[in-house]
Length: 422
Image 1 (tube, rainbow, N blue to C red):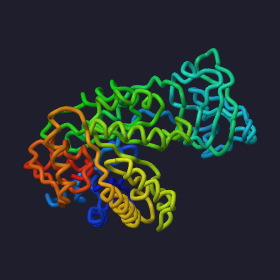
Image 2 (image 1 turned 90 degrees about the vertical axis):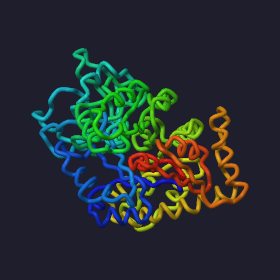
Image 3 (image 1 turned 30 degrees about the vertical axis):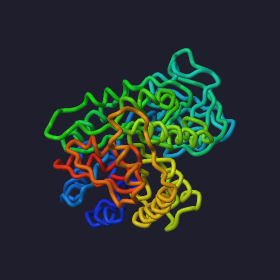
Image 4 (image 1 turned 180 degrees about the vertical axis):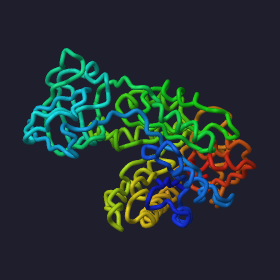
């Protein structure tokens, strides 16, 4: 009853593989637009030609994941493919083109690395940290150039760096728009194609969410529901206002684990899941859930515990990323995830672990239905739901039995796929 989101990619982009994912429990298909071109040939193929939407019996939702505003490294000195940075090396971070420079003679530098964030010098302070390539390289700012275009840093830990790698500025407010031009094009296409959800990357404030909701060409489909991805400290600090404006939340642990100390990620995850449960909005736990299964046919014991804990904490959905997009064992990954979820849900059923809300009188009939289902040991709760509102109201209590929602609109049915138990 906990939903499974599968990212589609080279390992799963055929009709045969999509059908197998569905048969093994995929309820939402994720299209990652970070890697999509501007002609939309590939996502169109996945949505239409290969059959995520190919039959009413195959009621599966589409979640489009935007690229979002990112900071990345540009071509390196001498246009080399890779540069090795030694711990203790001096590294200049600049917005100036360095591709024509001669590469450093040794890993000890000095190095110059260009980034695509024009305001980096005015944003940072001496002592601030800069993380390259998901935190594999950590730099500390030692001086800020008067030109406003460069920073001097020292490498606290070194490693290899390439162009187009991510740059994170933990504990620093970033002056970037919520939507890039690519995001706007992707959102317009998603609206026109009838995508059910948009996962918005690097959301920092409630205003960011509202700017996404304004991008709606008002075509024949309803506006996609906005799932805000919490990936940095600013998003965490503004979580309540983001939750208020959003249709749901994704706990995006990859970048979040770089932006905040990794030891704090589990507490942040639990906080977000609990607050989403409190207001009855769906919450997705994502990133590296079964990461080892990209290369191995069995998960680690820690990964099994991670998936089970997310279920027991009240997550509506868990997500597979590289495991199904590009991994060697996509079907084994979803089978493993569904198996762990089934075991976890048996625990919740045995404990009669249901989330009851004490909000207002409008929820009383739904609460009564869930309580009655528990007391009478029924097999399912049947809901007639024209718009999906009643089904969502029942699902917010996280009942331990399925909620069978009967709808007259297929898009309403698909938009319920992210809610646990429905």
